Image (cartoon, rainbow, N blue to C red; front, top):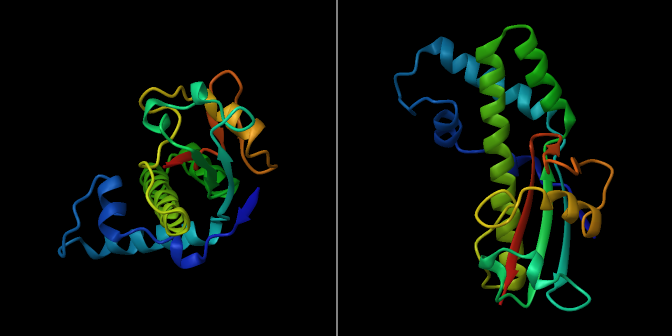
Length: 187
C-alpha cells in the first residue's frame, strides 16, 4: 500500500465550486463581510486539514479482487486502483463544535469548503493515477450506482487497512466524515 501526502496547493478548490457548494453564486458583488467570512473559512480549513491518501493497485483475478465484488462499471477491468482519502479528524471536530455553538453559517461554510477540498484532492490523485496507468473508467465510490456503501468496510479491511480512516461495518459510513473511498478500473 502506498501512502501519499497531497501537496498543500492540491487542497485548494476553485472559488466557484466552494461558493456553489455553500449555496452561493460566484459574483463580483459579494458583500465585503461575506468575502471576509469566506477567507476566514479557507484559512481555518487549511489550518485544520491533515490530508492523506492510502492507495493500492490490485489485479482483477482469483487472487486479487473478485469481479463479483466490483460494480458493473468496473467489470471489464483487468486491474483496479483503490484509494481512500481524508482531510483528517480536526475538520470534522470543528464543524461539529461550530454546530453545537449554533454558529450555523461558519459550520456550513467549513463543511462546504472541506467537501470541495476533498474532491479537489481526489481529482488530483485521479490525474496522478491516469498519468501512470493510462485509460481507465471514471472514478467510482461505494454508495453510488450498483455498489453498496457497506463495501467501504470491506475495502478498508482487505486492501487499504490504516489507522486514520475507518468504516462502520453495519453502515459503511466513513470516519472521519470528510473521507472518500474511490476505485478506478484499468483496461
